[in-house]
Image (cartoon, rainbow, N blue to C red; front, side, top):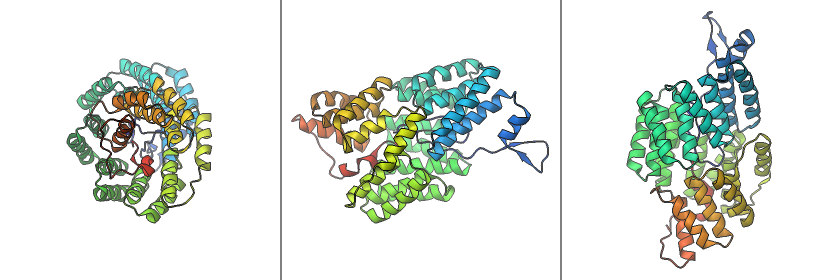
Length: 399
């Protein structure tokens, strides 16, 4: 599922993801009176250690760095900064919003909702808290609640963060035209290079999931033109190349992707592309990343449910999928549970969850493939898209 974080906006969601895959521009250092020099936030906090909002902002930067670098150790640093901020003023909306963002980054979406709502109660005009609330409610399967939060964002500040979330809500309803329209509005509103890259990347994702690989690759290229360091767009190029049969090109791109950002999703995509090319997948780094994220307090049963269903032990996949769905009963978790149950030999129970995953009209090729395959196993008529390649299923996951 798509994760949303634009510049200073604190958000996630996104689905995907598998692990939270957001990207933000590197925060600018805070200016000081001397126009010849710019003071970093850390320097400011050494000078003004009682600045609770400064500590909250530092925590937010650490959360962003965890997402950008794939290093979950930044979550621990964020927790430390927030402990100081909360000691100074635990009722401030900026502190509460940063705490919500950290909870969301660790996939503790119930806590994220609680903290975001407290931030909103303290300041009903705080757009960042509504962003976290929208994404966390979506992760919990509360799409109506997520829409209310997005609508409020649109009222308060109809900019890039609001437009991208509105786009995702439309995509979940199956309204791809409206989803594209909102993303185009976001692109027109964006000015920072990272924001422009972000909007272009998701225009590429819409095209990719619609089967238009040429348009998708074009959008990914435009995203990298705007911001060459934007790794998701490089991964998008790798995806488009692999799905287009250009496996040597795709593998070269994936090498660059995982050197920059060895997130589990990218490692799984790389492994599947290697298998497709007749090579052996090496999951060593993936399993190491799993341990690192777990040690940092990140609960990511979704990634491991999907991975074990396709490449490991179906019983383990079911265990992870049930745990994920119990905490976060969203469409992606429902699909993961359905597929794990199917792989474990339980197609009847699997169908119930596959129907839940596709109930909103979301036209995602992976969901459609999973449901059709399950229905066929039960002897029901179902059309499997012949263009969908199940050997590269991770490349169709939700970003």
